[in-house]
Length: 41
Image (cartoon, rainbow, N blue to C red; front, top):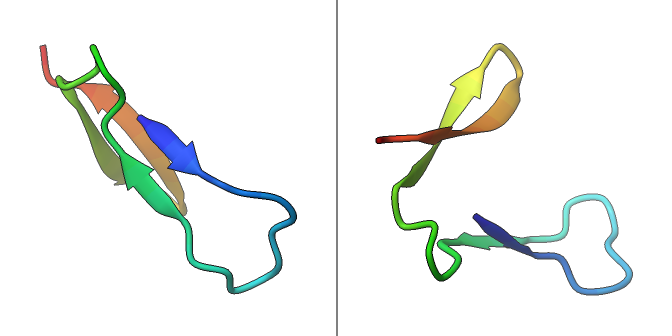
């Protein structure tokens, strides 16, 4: 996963998550109040 963060970031700014080259087997899921990346393989 890649995070399009830019610089600087403020509270409430929109960010973009996308698949990185070579990491197409990853998914995002919630773990409590955190977003975590899991491999689907």
